[in-house]
Image 1 (spheres, helix red, strand yellow):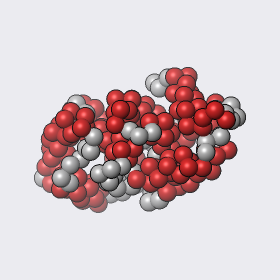
Image 2 (cartoon, rainbow, N blue to C red):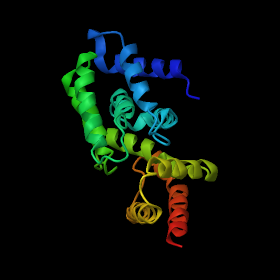
Image 3 (cartoon, rainbow, N blue to C red):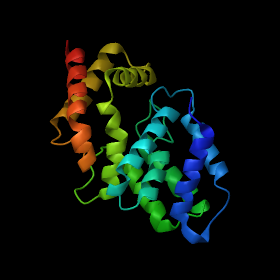
Length: 214
């Protein structure tokens, strides 16, 4: 069970760091709105557990980011809109950030950076000089390097979210995603991710792909 008070505190620290000395309205209602979204019933992997894990990994990778607070806010918003049967979740999540953050007191330039980062999670392909994007994408993909039991829970959660897709179609689509990931020269762009997560992630992805291909 996620610690909602701890998550509210993490949201407040990130928001206050992003909006600077000008301040703004009470952060808690914004946190509660997002927490409610992350607890919607259609979610089985993209839950508060995933949000917490991404925030934890951003903390690990913080030194590689140019603006860690913007990355943390992007983590909060990156799956804030999540309907498995829809294809524009990242765009709708970015637009939610563009509406909510200025109201919460975040300057326009920083709001634009958060929204850009959210949109980047469509393909997880940050540029070589995109430090913020590399941190967010590595944090989001770190589940691929999880221990076997956690990786199995992740894949089961994803399958449950797409329960409306027939088994054969799901296996074909999932296998295509895994092949695309395996074809990438690097899954992780930060030095930490490359050292600590790359090899395990490739092993996990390859094992899952082989199972789907049987």
